[in-house]
Image 1 (cartoon, one colour):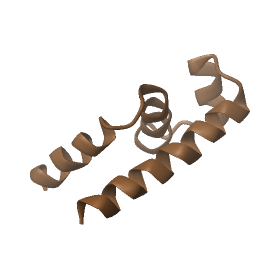
Image 2: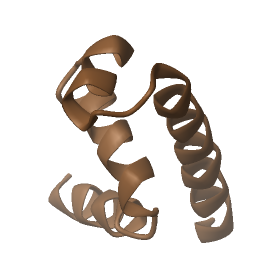
Image 3: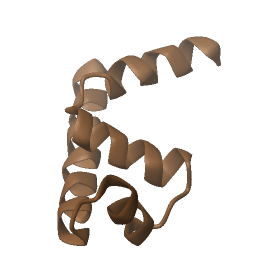
Image 4: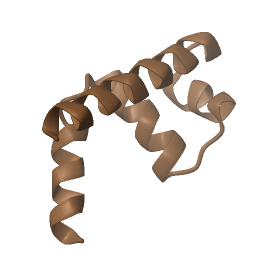
Length: 66
């Protein structure tokens, strides 16, 4: 399990910082998108876009790893 977590964190670290932070705030810290917008002082639409592209990039990284 520890090895899987390390591999996942390595993949996360490949994402651009704005995408990585939105992804972590939403899925790990369990913040709502509106809360993330407030925390990051970013428009809600930008938060949604960053989350979308972060998930897409992460999915691509996982596929490339296999």
